Length: 155
Image (tube, rainbow, N blue to C red; front, side, top):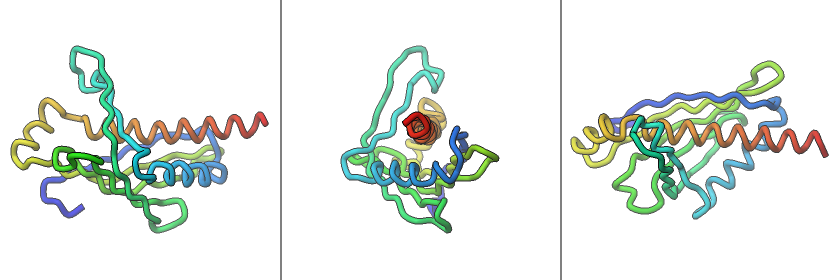
């Protein structure tokens, strides 16, 4: 990302399925995620260490394209509405082999909107919100792949 005030994010999540099985499942999930009107990123407010419980879900517009190999996808994620009020994430999602299982690795950066005011809010009240919502996104993909794998082995 070329934005001068971007924040780097890196997160990884294990998948209880071999990479050979996980690859087509991740591809399908990302196609669904990129469908207009079907995707959102969510955040549990308690992850920000605030004294109350709530889940915030923001509908997003995602662009998913091929990366450097079949196991890599370039992502651009922004709010579907009022995009100027939310961070924009750009990065790569990779599926890595990890023995008999696999791992999803997300790396990239998000640009904070609203200039100095946005950076102040991101550094205080909403510190960690963008990263937590992206970590949740990766965990949800991993969970869906593992569930598909479990049902496939049962059937």
